[in-house]
Structures are given as structure tokens and as C-alpha cells.
Image 1 (cartoon, rainbow, N blue to C red):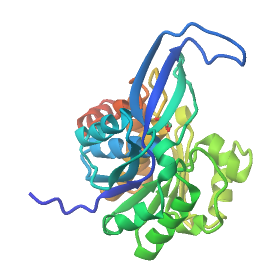
Image 2 (cartoon, protein in one colour; image 1 turned 135 degrees about the horizontal axis):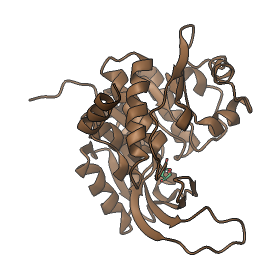
Image 3 (cartoon, helix red, strand yellow; image 1 turned 45 degrees about the vertical axis):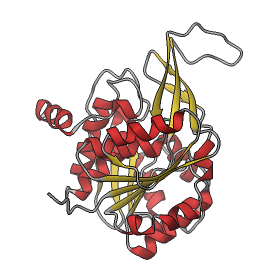
Image 4 (cartoon, rainbow, N blue to C red; image 1 turned 120 degrees about the horizontal axis):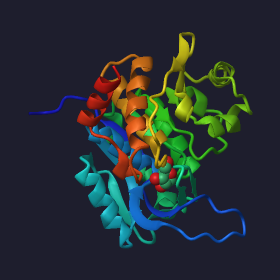
Length: 306
Ligand code: RIB
């Protein structure tokens, strides 16, 4: 049967995560004995793609991998998760890499080495213009060159395609961005980069909306999410309390699930509740893309907490 839903299209990053498990994040100059090491697919863009696809929504990704050993493995992981990879290409050199520490308390420290993600250029957008134009929503992050991000946002604005921008890792944005983004989804550290330290979620969201954004979701981990719409309602969406073992990609899981729920017609607060549930499951599992829950997982979780 033909799927008439407009796809989610991710224009973003894909990375192999090099994960060292450790009792705690080492201090500068300190050597610790680790408890494990694994290579596992990640990258904020790919994680968001897998999150949405595992929830049963049609998803396509526009991105680049390297011609190293990781490239084919990253592509295969996306395909296995149900992501359409027709918009992906392989370029000479290394794939994106993310060496990271994940501590026993679930917290992490990550360095992203762009590799092929740094080669995402305007041509990648032009070559897949029809796909991007067909999207119900485009999801972007800040792990590709800023010029390509700006070009993508301009293209989406001209084509009337809503964009969810995850401003991670935080970086200075061109002023045109604010009015081109439908949903802006920073965590607390990222929000501070744009509007200064403001622990009060209402104030923080108001400062962000004042820049011209239409919708803001402040992702506050264990505190839940604060959802605010320009000229409309703003309120907290409560978290689900679980024992976190690995918080890597929880924010990506939230974005993928939030986009799916919005496109399925949920209001933003109900969509954020759905996304909080997906992220709560994600932090109870190890890995980035590997930790994304399926639709039955989220439905069962919500039924349990109803
Ligand atoms: O958001 C988590 C992701 O950030 C990891 O998978 C890592 O690849 C970095 O991009």
C-alpha cells in the first residue's frame, strides 16, 4: 500500500560513536581504568532519523559518510532501521567520528570530529531538492557546515516546509535563522548560549521567542520539557522518572519522536509528552541510534504510566 504521509527529512550529520565506558568522566591529567569500549552508530542527524523511523514514520536522510570502513556500516544501520538512504552519498576520507566517555551515572562527554559531515555542501541540498520539498518537516542540527545549514533553511522557507532545528552543539547562528525555524529545541546549556544563563524556563523561552522563533521546546532532561508557542500557550510537560544508564542521544530521541507526533496531528504539549516517553526509554538503554525505542515500546510505556 502506498504511504501518503509526507516524510520527515533529516539534513544533517551521521557519525560513528567511539564509546569508552568509565566509572566517571576523567579529570584533566587523570588516567582511569575503563569498563568497556564499543563502536556504535550515532550522529545527531542519524539518531533523529532512526528515532522517527523506529516509531513507524517515513524518514529520509540527506547526509554524507566517508569511504572508510565505517561508511558502509553507518549506511546499513540506517537502512536496517527503515530510513530511506537515497539522499546519502559516500565521499573520500573519514566518516564523522565521535569519541566519547559515558560514565556509570549515565552522563557523558563527547568530541565530534566532522569528517564527511564537514563535506555536506549546498550541492547536497540541490541534488535532493525534490525530496526536501516533499517533506512534512525537515530536521536539522549543527554538526554540518553553517553555510549548508543556512542554505537548507532558506530553501525550506521558500518551499513552505517547516524546520525543527536542534541547536546542538551550540554555535552562533546567522540572524536570518530565527524566522526560518518552526521549532527550536535547545537543552539548558545550548539555550544559555543563545539567551544567557536563565534557569527560569518561562523567561528563557520568552527570550528565545522574542528573536522571532515560532515555537520553542526547552529540553531539560529529568525536569521534563517546557513548550512555548509564539503568541500562544506555554507550559511544562512533566518527565517520566526512570533509572538512566546512558543519556547519549536522549535529546535526539526527543526530537525524532516530537516530529512524528506533531506530524501525526498531536498538539505540541501532547507531542512533547510522547517524546518525553520515548526519551525516557532511550536513557535506559546503551548506545545512540541503538537506544531508540519502537512504537510498541513507547505505547506500552505510556500505557504503564497512564
Ligand atoms: O546527540 C548524541 C550524538 O552527539 C552522538 O551520537 C554523537 O555522535 C554526537 O554527535
